[in-house]
Image 1 (cartoon, rainbow, N blue to C red):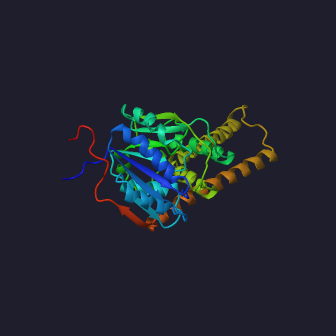
Image 2: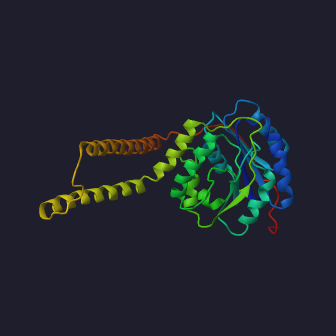
Length: 322
């Protein structure tokens, strides 16, 4: 007899969470158990060198609902860790959660209530953030790009606390050579919803996000916009060429002129702006070419050092499946 597929898969990423992971696991279990839903927990250690993975192995041995624990060779970033979790999750819905206790597991019913209304994705939104100015400003800039990519006017794409219809995620066939991209999944979803949640200051561990990873994250999504910026630039340059041609025609035929006086200062400003624009476009093209090169070289975004996985999903049958 095959154990039914769990209704919910919790994908939990961990980075130096030795001090917080036990409290997180206990609070998550207390929150989910009364809901009467079948579930599994997939936990990924993103290259932590403290006792985080040992704690995860302890959960694997003592809790039948922890069906998979994964240890990555090195810190590959939260996106890569989430991807590793996606590839081993079996549920009908996938729920992403951080284990640093900045977000409350107890607020899960707020998201589930909306998801049960038929939404494809339900996302938490941190109304009062307790992060550094650098993180907050960077997040706002990222949201601008991700709104353009996804086509959805969300305010907090960076909040990990999200519920996805698993069919959306599996359709992309994510893995070490094609990592999870939030905005791209949102772009294929029709019904999305944001739910206000509580955000706390970090008590333990340290964030895995730094300037290098944030920059790479932005470029991943900016490259995804490559077609639209080039179309915009093409239209802009064609309009400028049209205005220049119109100026020449008018100068030959009529007394009306556009920009009757072209000063050396104007020419210099236009040249500098043009050079900077060309350099920016070349950098964007170079980033696009390099990423294509890495894809062709089959360079994995993450490598699994160790994985422990139960043979079948746990958590009991879904209500009404018996």
